[in-house]
Structures are given as C-alpha cells and as structure tokens.
Image (tube, rainbow, N blue to C red):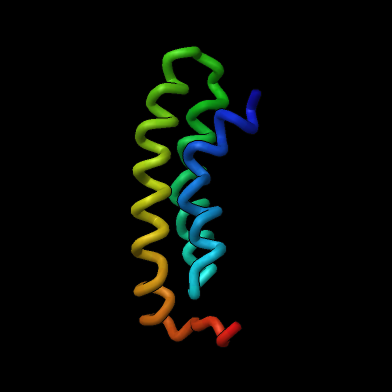
Length: 79
C-alpha cells in the first residue's frame, strides 16, 4: 500500500531518470522528502495533502534541478 501512495509523487522523478539529465530525479526526491516526513504522523487526511502538494513539489524539483546543477558546474556526460 505504501508503494502506491509514494509512486504518485515520485512519478516525476522516475520520468526524469529517462531524460538526458537524470540528476533532475534528485531534486524531485529532495522536495518530496519533507512531505513524507509529514505523513509519518499517520492521520488519514494528511495523505491527501501529501499526494497533492508532494506531487507538485516533486514536479517543481524536477524542473529546477537541471538549471541549478548547471550553475553549480555539475553535468552529466552523454549516454
């Protein structure tokens, strides 16, 4: 059951692994992690917020990680 709950928000990270810059998956996971910590409380309604806001955070993380990594000087060699 936990896998189904988490896969929705981690879908942007999984898709990022297939792109030319798989480091975007790191940003997607990092921005989703605080939502998982929030879900550890176990209240049933918090899972709705985690899925909605966690997925949005994951998408934002996937989009902004590429430019941030380029600014820092981290790049991925051609496959």
